[in-house]
Amino acid sequence: MQKQVTTAPGELQPLLTIPGTAKMLSVSERMVYKLIDFEGLPTISLGRSVRIDPVSLKRWLVERENTR
Image (cartoon, rainbow, N blue to C red):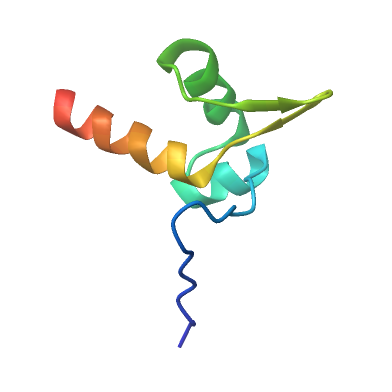
């Protein structure tokens, strides 16, 4: 049984990597890059690294679910 982690409002959550996002969405890393480039998946750039905020990812998924 996994322990559920909750965060207080305004508390930072760890950012997701491209491989972590791909695993979470059950898609390939290439598909994550396509979602970023063509579907507007929001990212955060830290130097040459690309990260995805889990809260923004959830919001983006909900928006897509409601518009299709």
